[in-house]
Length: 574
Image (cartoon, rainbow, N blue to C red; front, side, top):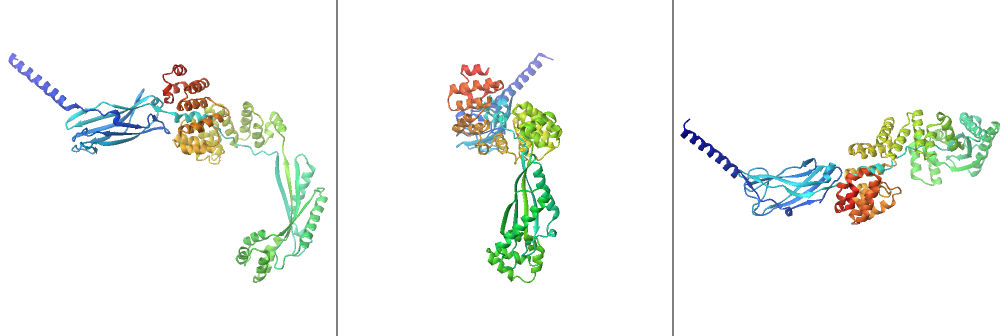
């Protein structure tokens, strides 16, 4: 190749490089950046609500800023150690630019608003929020620097996982009673206007059971206790004027004599209380409504339309034929005397139950065993009793639930979850294990699972507490406050802080009987928010002494931003 030809080729290469550089220079230009004063962030700083970080960015493109051919995309970006999260990109464009973006006037400018919500991760406590831009002006790419609009995320709402760990699981209670009320009845019917009792008028099995019960009570004073025995004589509404009290009293006497004769024969005598009644219209109406009497509907109207005895009896006499049907089917049921005995079944005493558990627990009923666990404050002994109950009565869900309660109170979440799960497997509709399982899910941050468990727990005595904690986790603070109000707890203090009810939070904290590490931490948050620096540091020191795992969280917690430069704060959180 000649020297002349080589020189020509070299000139062409330099010309091509120059063209490329020129194109690059004209295709990318700087655009004036938006000023931070032109953008506002709410809330500032960002704040966790539920498991999200929601916020609103409002800004303005000033006059003469947005070229008529300009296109601009805006993306909120939250950057933190180890990662970033980008929100939805919004597009804006000038009056003559092609595309589907929001049009911005060159002469007037425009306001804009960005609503965003990021899923929260703990590293976001220390973070920075930016607006990232990309755009073009005709064929030129625009270069705009990222605009910092916020710093940090306030994560106080996430403390519900620690406050719920101090909640109160509910005990599945026993129904043991040292004395159980029982009742035995018998009844005799009379012929119309008669006082004499015929043996054929008595339902003998009923009488035999009545006599046997009284005899058993009299012969075993340890296991039974007679409460009251009474005889009640009833009159029936007839088609003539109601009989006088003479018939009433005579029936009382004859029925008492009859039953006491039978009791004496069985060597089961007992004191008798006599009780007579007036016309038993309510029972009469009930029997008529259940009868096959042809004039039933007409007769029922008498009860509905007339209130006094005289009016009712008058209307009864005016009824058409059918008296004998009514007398045979209904009135015979009304002419009666009833005998009843109320008595108590006496069970084992506390000392006897405890002794029986030591010697042979298998002889105790499930109710006695569950009751035995309430007779001691020793958690180890309680666990032993509930464990034995679960072995002896594997189909009863309560022992497993109560074992889970003990594990929860000792901070053993894994063991508590296993016991509550076994309890729920035995009784899927059990309110107590459902509510307690919800607490476990909340401690683990499993909001959806907690909500599903709460749906089964409506009858549980701790439903309001479990539901209130769920509402905190979901970010519904006002509803949570309503459910938790009235019973001092760490969760109540937390939601009061989230609702900015600082007087209420202080009162609640002071009323907590057994303050825990999270109680002290909430006190520190309250003091920091109310600008009481020394109290905030003292409370934080108490919290970190009780639970060192809070140290790393506290070091990043924006609640203490005003203390970050404090030597004592740095020493506490190192």
